[in-house]
Image 1 (cartoon, rainbow, N blue to C red):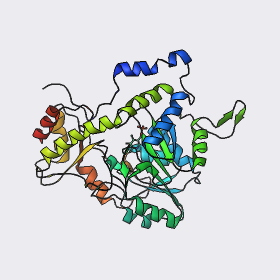
Image 2 (cartoon, rainbow, N blue to C red):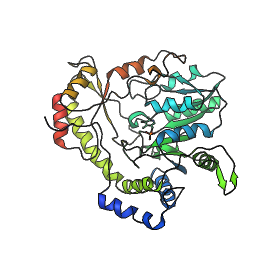
Image 3 (cartoon, rainbow, N blue to C red):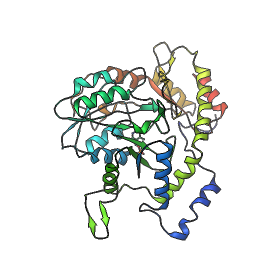
Length: 365
Ligand SMILES: *Cc1c(COP(=O)(O)O)cnc(C)c1O
């Protein structure tokens, strides 16, 4: 039956290149604290992502927590968000002592349904935290219109959307801030890592304090910050992976095209709608198992498992339904989010995936 095929596999630079790149650390003995490589990666990433400002962080989750914290919302404020996401999005809101208000998503692309946001706004609402889920771009224009009308902040969870351009602009330029994850399983990785992007320099200073204990001098602490800065080894991993990122995407595109070729005529297997104004990073390969397919999503998941192929029910259960949140917050009907959570399956997708693996997976379907 062969080896297990996992849903993802970390992209890595050639071993010798990485070893060569980290050598200087053995001369300087400078391993963290906003060193040379941290600064260099911040600069190169802001250029690559076409954003004005970028703050490099220890991981995507802390980037989200700090981005929300940076705006200084009063405790108990409400934040409108999506339940069809990785648990981190909701955790970041709740850990900031805010109340998540779950909005339904669109069946067409899994992103927040902008037509249902306004009815959820109360006098306690301070922000919207939408997610560019699987790299599918939210309706940023309408979300901006709503946030302007009601004076809300918009913080995008762009953890899936590294490198995506929308209307020719870096995805991180939308809203008041966007958050990226550079976790080992993401399309671009620094082993663990993340970043917040934004356009106001004031926010850079704020995030700098939050990620480094608020230390502003040998004897001066101006804010109650945490420790969320990226270290030099991770920064170097990022510099190496960034150099080859376009190659990574091209390789994933090849796999994506092979998948689509082999599955597009299969009855009962559907895909999210494509947005012609957005580029793709091919981070994930989600399929939607409809009722005209021979098996349910869960049956297909189990079938794959029995053949040593690990797929993921991303995102099931909805974050709103998880043990730690269930029945804690008032939840409106979430029919589309529930429907997707029951039917979506993400298939293996990683750099260096062979045609044979795709053949095996698609033939099984
Ligand atoms: C991965 C992810 C995060 C968290 O990022 P980490 O780097 O793993 O902390 C947040 N939101 C979404 C949607 C994610 O997929």
